[in-house]
Length: 468
Image (cartoon, rainbow, N blue to C red; front, side, top):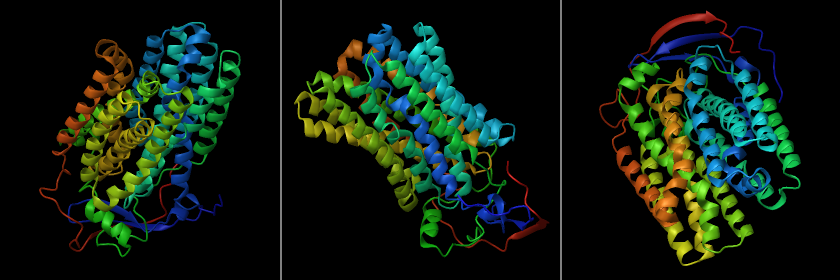
């Protein structure tokens, strides 16, 4: 990761478009941080993989934790619920601290690394379920929330002109980074070695998060790539189409202003529904596979396939949303996710393994694709300057959707697996209907980027403000 000297001030200027939005132009990524901005995609991707196993591989460790600690299945599912709750709860305050400069990106990642390690140590050594709930559910969940919010929002800041594919790629690390640990927890870990396995995994993943986060750096407020004209259609066809389908926010909205538009509430509700379905599917994928009579190794394969497609689907849908629009892709994803729940029931009922694997993969795709849609859409609607806080408000919906594991256990207990999966499918369909009402604030009708009137030139400043 080569760097260059960034001590010499680089002039920049600030211009505004016809809507009054300001852009800071003239500085390159190398001028600001001494390396290409692609590193602010690669490093956040690595950081996201470091926290993924706590959510996506946790269900694979249920049997061993039950046998080793004598914790009930219900207690274990509520432990995951607490993790998801705390991960979502920290998003808004962490975003606020990030945007005000009180919590630099690097330190947010270090706190996340510490929480990751503490979570695995708690699963290995906690003498009772209450301490495990605090160590894994609370501290690991909060640490993961800091990492998640920091990594996802970092990409939007460095790629304001083409954020969909990049955000999706980084977001994907949160799913397929868990794949090796699904197999590890399912086929290798048992009551004879669970402490060694959990501690080793915790140390390794905490190191991954810390090393990646050490190199994090934010761009200055209002920064725009020097080679992209923010006031006219760009020459790059990819950037041009992305801006046509997903025009940048008309201005930089504060959290209060964003909330008053009404879009945050709609996004919050849609994400609560779809992410709840996603978490429910992750939690009960193994259960419905075993109920259908599929072998444990096959069920683990289905879970891993789901995680792989969940992760890669985020990158694919992010790229597609740059081409066809964020809202359109979101609606399709909600329909796909809902239909997949019915497909899983059907394939399990007829005990058709190939179809079970296919619908598990489709469910994984839909469950993962929703997250980069909302992350990129939040920046599209409200701007990049306060994106960590604004997306924190939207992402806080997982405070409710996190109940997909704990409440899912109760629904399964009352209605059976089929009833629970049918309910999940219907919830996803309803979220797609609600998404029809989403529209960028400040744009009365569907528009595209077109040449703006002559920009208002701001002062030229001899040297950028340095990010931390």
